[in-house]
Amino acid sequence: MIIILRSNSSDEDISSVEAKIRDMGLEPHVSKGIQRTVIGAIGDESKIDKEILEALPCVENVVRVMKPYKIVSRDSHDGDTVIDVGGVPIGGNRVQVIAGPCSVETADQMNQAADAVAAAGCRLMRGGAFKPRSSPYTFQGVGVEGLEMFQNAARKHNLPIVTELMDVRMLDTFLEHKVDVIQIGTRNMQNFDLLKEVGKVQTPVILKRGMSATVSEWLMAAEYIAAAGNHNIIFCERGVRSFETAYRNMLDVTAIPVLKRETHLPVIIDPSHAGGKAWMVPSLSRAAIAAGADGLLIEVHPRPAEAWCDADQALSPDQLNTLMGELRGIAQVIGRDL
Ligand code: PEP
Ligand code: MN
Image (cartoon, rainbow, N blue to C red; front, side, top):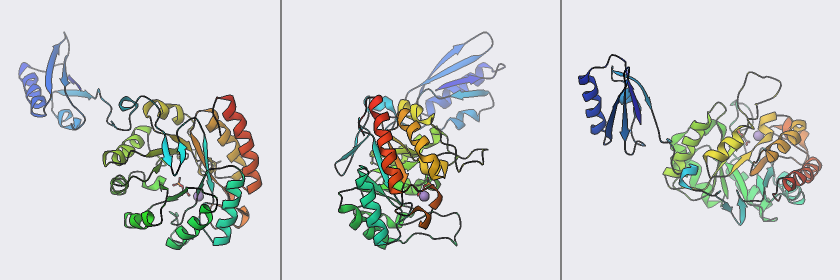
């Protein structure tokens, strides 16, 4: 940590900052310039609250040297982490497409969706049984029954399932239903109690980016899960809030190379909630794979116009099939499989 003092700081000020640094368990190294004094604080700064130093009247600025996230940081792990989801690797050379409806509706709908997902060559399936809807008067998801319908449909094709957990009280139910990947939605990215609880299990977690979260906040949210013991984390960019109203969210493709540099964990893209329209999904998906995403989370419905939730952004089975063909070509060009 580097502490820059105000230009008029006295020797007494310097001594008081040095004492504070020692109190915090770090070792101060004073460097006096003509105009400014800078103090380097050496030691483990990860648990230090820099505001304590910033609050001292003689301190102008405090700069951290270490990253505030450790376990998820690339510094802690050189290679790319590959997460095993029921035998399907996420984060390796193979790009994985997780497809399925926004929400679980009926057994028939899930069976048809699973057939379509498997036929298109996807190896994992998505579907929400509990839905975080903006309005309390809209469909909220079919609940626990939905987990059963989802498992019955997906197991026929050996597709591991991805489904959103909103309430910490449902975690045991998710484990009993053998949910393969717990999705933490954009609205819960900073629900720290929820993050701590999913950190206590080993089920892989897809952590969606908060709709207005910075990359650093997102990494810190992942660190909450990792610090509690679960290192099986997959980042999912799903578009951020912006000034633009022509689409639902703005897909932050830049986050892909930035995250790949900052973390060893896999990074996937949700083009469906980014664009918000089915016709945008192919372009955004192609861009994501070309930019280095490890996978995609795509909404598909046997009859999109009849979907109970997010109908406008769901691909049809045929559209998914065509898209998978295109994505295979892009993956090949960049030396990956799909
Ligand atoms: C979803 O995946 O269905 C969903 C609600 O996503 P998000 O949390 O990104 O809005
Ligand atoms: Mn949706």
